[in-house]
Image (cartoon, rainbow, N blue to C red; front, side, top):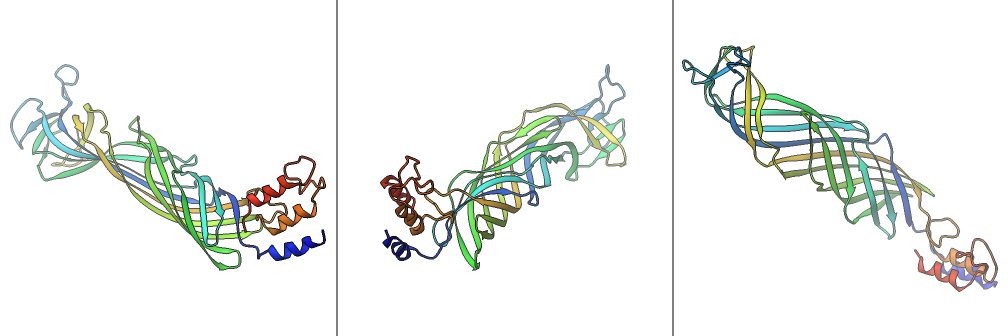
Length: 340
């Protein structure tokens, strides 16, 4: 068997970078995300006056002066639900280097919230004709839209999970250091609660475009990358109609008071934008490579030489299938997992 070292020398090549690394996203990673969704709304409002239950309540009357009673005032509006959240995401992925100049990311998943719910605010921009109120006495000219806060809540869940193949490129800048670019198709899910009511949407397709630096140090690796993603959201199903929702409207002339109104209306479909700026710091460890007998993350002539050198023995290293003998089955296993 003296020929075996010569065979190994003939077939051995330089150690091409190959194999897979299991990465964990580190706590130093940062996600900055915002979600804005707008729902058109149209309906009527009136004062909360009631002759029996609330005789001192607000009354609404069309025009600037005169009139009586508590009248319905037609309006159009849009409600904007928005949030901005800075968090330290958690997650994991597998990064595989299987061809010169290529990189593959699989099983990418990230929890963008990671136990840090973000605040959600809901504002309404409302347009109405001129009217005035009694208790308090105020005039509301028809001068365009007014925006007021109407509710608050929180974002409880935000995640991105890989939904398809992600094949990118790598360029060696210094030994064992690579610039990596890869597009990862994902499904983004966001949900939470606002004004005591849950909200959420079906998973929204998106793409996380990662550009960063991969450093390989034997069986370990580090990966730092950034991504910016902005995707449309919607159309979303409209929320249930509003029926006599308490609606405190700031007085206009004079300012400083509050008219207590009851708002009713019907929503239309919602649309919006989701934006994610992601900075990932991740640490990886080499995944086991089938057929790699010397632990260099490659299946090469070196592993072939190990099998041939131990042919017919019970070597625990070369007897891959552990049947007690190094034979053709072990040789076939090495050849079928050949990487270089």
